Amino acid sequence: MSIERIVLAVAGSFVLISAILAYTVSPLWLWFTGFVGLNLLQSAFTGFCPLATILRKFGMEPGTAF
Image (tube, rainbow, N blue to C red; front, top):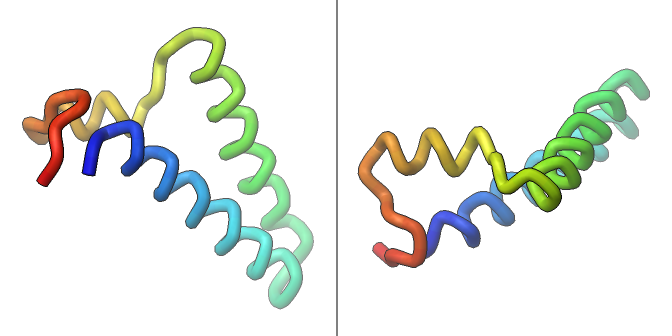
């Protein structure tokens, strides 16, 4: 799986989990959903993604699969 796919999978998982937590626990979890969405938006414009940086530090290269 490439870095890009991992980032999309993690972001999607965070959105789903926080939406479920907002429904079952507290609506304040929607702040986390918004944070993830905002981070995806800024990443689209700036090219900076914190998770991609972390994955590169662990030795993954863009476009590589495991």
